[in-house]
Length: 201
Image 1 (cartoon, rainbow, N blue to C red):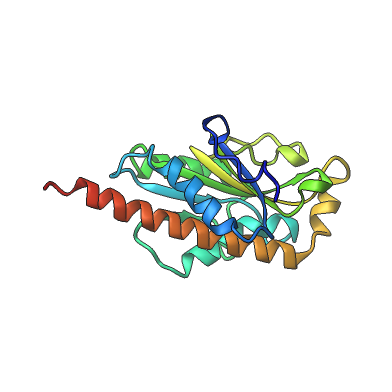
Image 2: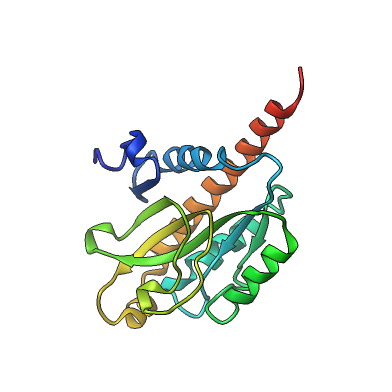
């Protein structure tokens, strides 16, 4: 067991990094998301922004998560970014303008693929604070989210576009399934508990 993956001290609660093969990954991600969601107001609109493109194997993690979340057709959150309607570098700024014009003080959760060290490939991260999309390929894009989830899909540091194009789809699919199911479960549980707490005795 990797002690770093399961450290839940107050110092480390801002972020979680765990291999997608960890048998307790769903529980770990759900509990960490719940920790962050409880900072949101119970009436706040939750908006999930899944960033990426289906034109690149490594960069389709976000749209895959979005399409999986869309199948639940849930009223508990608003969703942007699917395989059919991706949110990417060309429309990200406009999408964010639309979100903040539509919802008052939304609680935004950003989702994206990223590159990292070889030892971290296959890890999923839950991090407090905004996502910086495009940083791995030297693009200047606006930050996204009050919190964010990323999947480390391949090794960074050289020929990033080529690396993203040559990422194993099987890995990206597995990670997208874990992220989407864990995120849906966390939002549903948070909403249920928040509703119960809001009911006067």
